[in-house]
Image 1 (cartoon, rainbow, N blue to C red):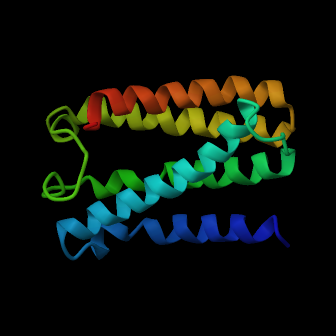
Image 2: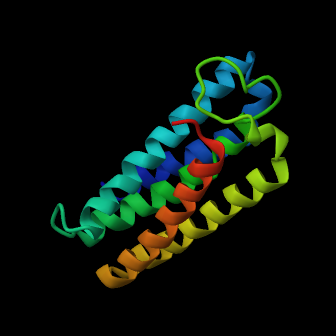
Length: 150
């Protein structure tokens, strides 16, 4: 049951996210949504990273659960970068809106790498998880370097 609950929650979040852009009444609502999506993604990605880097004991079940949630969350924030969401409480660089094709390519690369991490986590093999975690982390960093203010 503990394994099913996070997956059900993640699936429900992704099902609800499809019409999310229509639900944003104000640009700041979209900013809050994408920040929340990234926060949850980072929390689960960090759990895997702590295991991959030996800071906490490896737990294959926890890694698989976190990777599944991370993959779902990796798909959510992108629609919340719509018009008018470049202002206010955001760390997004103007390049998000001026270099949309590059931003889209970076987001797709990240989603693909997180999907590979999820596949690796399902094997329960720490070496495979470490390799996939490194590639996923590099894709996150590349996007942060180009599209996120420090």
